Image 1: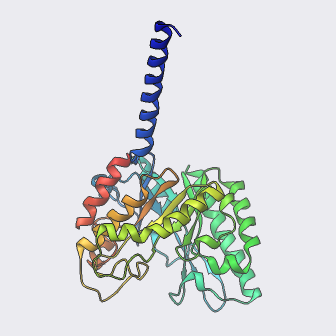
Image 2: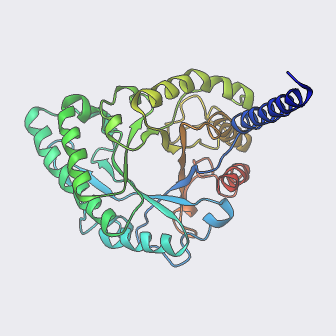
Length: 343
């Protein structure tokens, strides 16, 4: 090989090495781009005001999950929505006004219907006989399809067709496959389902959806105030399972809900709304930081919706300082910084 050819080959190999190195850096460097950076927004007793989403600007959130409720009578299985006494923000008019206001503020929307039980029990533990289940399914289908149509009419980007309904799924999963098809027939956007943290791995229809939705209240530590690194370690067993599920289903993981109370022991049982544990801002902020560190740069992770946010001067005034809302706490800065990197 003559000198000129050797020089050309060396130059080519150098360029190739640099290209591989740049690709490695690109893959190795955490990137928060293209994540869903949202909040679950509380629909109020009254219609949302013109400044209702203003507090989301310093938070750097670009998505809101709007939650219209239906109500289920536990004894009969009867499910109703759009009732006269229901909060205005949860009804069709209130939902459409919120979507329009979100558009004005440059926000994307996930419409996320929930069911509230008449005895305040957990929907995932429903226990009906066959007749009551059939009645429940009729009411639930009517409820979901109505809001799926509303989502289509208002060009909502993402629709969640259920939240924490594992009892119903385990009883009759064929119903849910049919419901997914019915939603697809009236709504052309992306769809997901919000599985509770303890049942996400039992859902049979993830490959029929666009996202694997998880309400991510996973127990991570028994300590009162664990460090960020300890909490990151607590995530590892779940993280590998999420990756495998995402690979198997061919769908990204989305935290349809995530959040922590502003108390000690907030990572022990994160799903419990109210406890007697002591107020602790660093406990909440460290828990959120560990979650972001663990997932936000992963390519198979789509982002998530913080639980929860309120319209200013309304329900937030009545929420305990120990609640999930990070507003006015150290955690708000943590969320804001991460969400800014997502934009």
